[in-house]
Length: 137
Ligand SMILES: [Zn+2]
Image (cartoon, rainbow, N blue to C red):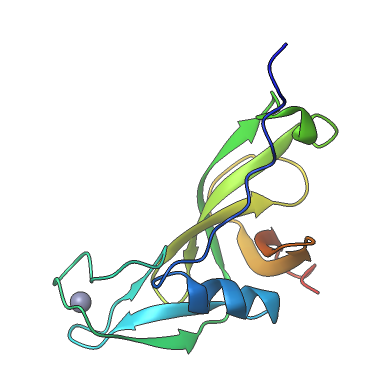
């Protein structure tokens, strides 16, 4: 029998360290391109629209609307078996970036529902999730 696959834990690198550190403080910090002003997610070394390498980290509201989602019915690893089914959503943040994370609550019946960021502390990291608007904590 093979060893169980451990639950994946994000590893900070030069691009993601400010983002992951901010999640630990329950804050959503995203890169704003210094050349074109667009906001990007996930953290990356250069702007996907203009190629600019300089960006400023700024807090965003965490509010947005569900763009799309997938319902996870089968556990990725045995660690997740007690958590299925759950929903992973892509969310169009009001600041302009499209982020993703677990969507708390029932699977949406249509796109466009308002959501807000929520933060779940694990031992090693803090996870970004989204909750239906009005249920943010
Ligand atoms: Zn840019």
